[in-house]
Length: 349
Ligand code: NAD
Ligand code: TDX
Image 1 (cartoon, helix red, strand yellow):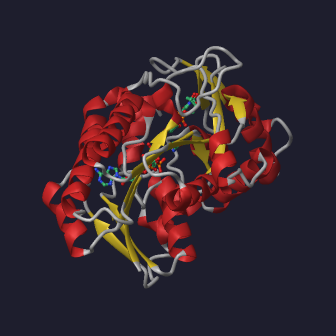
Image 2: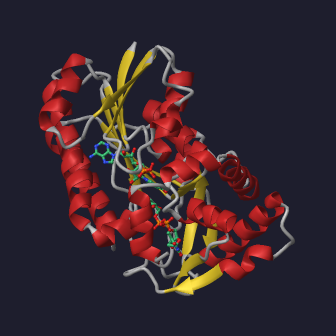
């Protein structure tokens, strides 16, 4: 029996990781610590919540006493840390909340682990990070590898880079057993519709404009969220302690090409004539400091741990569009309230 603390398990990626670990490892007890911010949603875990090896704890990773209590009361053996503020546009509006959660929250978890773990045998602090810490690529032949120097360009990526540095500093200074993974853009079910793919599917459904930032030439490398969860599983169990793994799908898309693919897929599934929703594509002012291109080289993960993506992108997009069209209630519930205000401020009515 192992007690595993997963932070941010009610969010997009976290909920897929919680589900995978609860189902695949009945011998583990999963404690999901989540503050349930606007991005956290327990509905994502309906199928898991009755399982005997799952416990939800509502709490803030920045709360010093609460986090220490969790480590001692539940004899935590390992952490998979996903809780974060994760949306670049929000980090431009409110950088301080990103420093608080992503930097101070991570530091608080590290400190609690260090204090609680006298014996480090079989302990692990797994920190889930992003490819954005490496900055922006301009040469089409270049990829981010694990040794690429950090060069974060947004308040979000600066806060994630800082948290990565603290994790490595704790490994070096205190001998804490750690592992870090840096992943590219995730897509799939249960993503909060402020991120490109679910936002645009929702807008197509409602006949609303699709706000493409700048020229639409920015490039992202997309990975299906369940493939990311499988990579985390592989690294958690077999990754070298103290090491870093890049996770990506070798699947680069220019935003505008991705948007056209989304439009075509959604129109087909909705029974609209081909090209019907193309008119919704609207070029708007660019994101401040918009990174041009991210592209991950994940060959180390493939070579050392045998991981590779399971899905072709076309299949993943079809599955994803279908999920959001079939789960209108989920979308409507998460887009009411606080998010409606954010949307108005960001894009107008
Ligand atoms: P998300 O925004 O969907 O979920 C974040 C979760 O963290 C939410 O459930 C939220 O309630 C919780 N949370 C936020 N602040 C908290 C706090 N102070 N205390 C406790 N819980 C808190 O994010 P996501 O897209 O699932 O990303 C998860 C992790 O993966 C993040 O660390 C992110 O940086 C990283 N990541 C994301 C992507 C991506 O494409 N989404 C890619 C690479 C890495
Ligand atoms: O309305 C939009 N219009 C638009 O053109 C939005 C929301 C986005 N975009 C562009 C900006 C990016 O080039 O689409 C691309 C993807 O944007 P996001 O979905 O906001 O993702 P990104 O900024 O690339 O960051 C994501 O990937 C790395 C996640 O949000 C991060 O948490 C992760 O670390």
